[in-house]
Image (cartoon, rainbow, N blue to C red; front, side, top):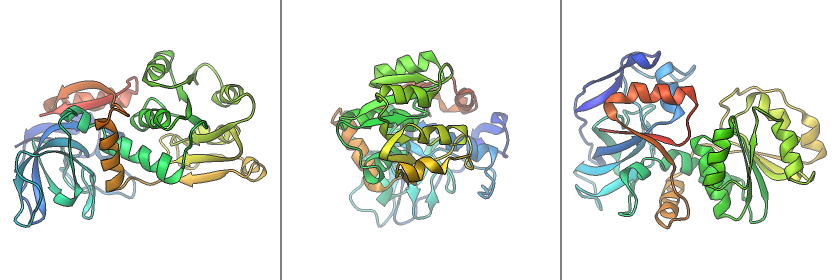
Length: 325
């Protein structure tokens, strides 16, 4: 098969589109013929290298996968070649695309219990946009944050995959969504996606703007997976008894904070880690029912994976980048 192989850790020039041995299924595995694979920042972190998380090289990344079953293992029941699937990449063996060879290839091995049926009314490109971003957002907002109708929610980093998923889930739940992004163009697109209010944090203090939008009462929920210098300011936007939800720290994991807001306002800081099989299945169901719609920014051929990762690294982009073999 052909694959986008990371030959060694470093820049995007370390990705080589070349031949790679076809995977073989274990008794409980299936081989999926990849039709689409969505890029995530994790793919860039794997390629660059993550302290404390060694990845053996050469390697194939890519966890957001949709395709059709090509081959099934001897003990697999309920799945047959030709079935349309997406999947939960978080397996009992490790994360597909991080510890296990991923979907930036023509074929990928997947434990059958991680498969999710892809309904006929969803494209492969849409299927490859759902698992990681929407699974993460589903767990964070509903499993951990318990968001409720008529609440106000501020989303930082709203133009990324998880941020867009949070906007759509928020609107589905009847929440007033305030989305913060770094350019006027992104803010306009987020309004089109469904955000009730947008804040261009390159032009104004997002905490002051959100405080004003909330009529100086504070928001019920802040979604902050940015961290860094956004952490202390975000605490100022939350009403007494409100929640701060986090599932990452793209701008820094050891930020300055202001504990006074946490104790005086009795804030709830809630972490959310990854997603479950149910989160992915539920997200696919919502998409099939038209309650959410994956935002696809660009579809590119698999052989252009290096260029696609450059595009993602520039961060001047909104919507999922999809690679198709």
